[in-house]
Image (cartoon, rainbow, N blue to C red; front, top):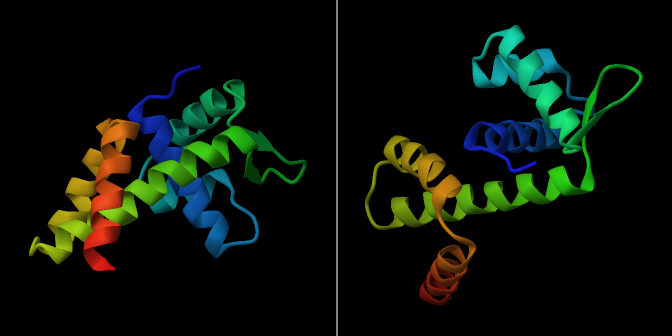
Amino acid sequence: MALQESGEMYLETILILSEKKEKVHAVDISEYMGYSKPSVSRAVGLLLNGEYIRIEQDGSIVLTDSGREVAETIYERHQLITKYLMRIGVPEAIAVDDACKIEHVISPESFDALKTHILNMIS
């Protein structure tokens, strides 16, 4: 199942929340993203069917290996692009917003080249 931008955003959110909390539940995702519980429930169902997440007996949501891989990729892109945009003078709020858009459409090749350039630039 190919993920769309919204699925990637949910996985990224689950990753971020799992770094802050021992257990992540749908209500946590709803509060963090500002989405309705029915919207989160639908997305969770799609991610579950795509085997990107699993639901534990206590109702907590856990990333599978493939879900974690996608989430970490998106989160790395978000962080690097945000830092770069801020470094070149973009205000933080705009940098975060723009990075959130770019992270979902940039090709792996372009991101790798950008990452290499940025890391060489700040070394």
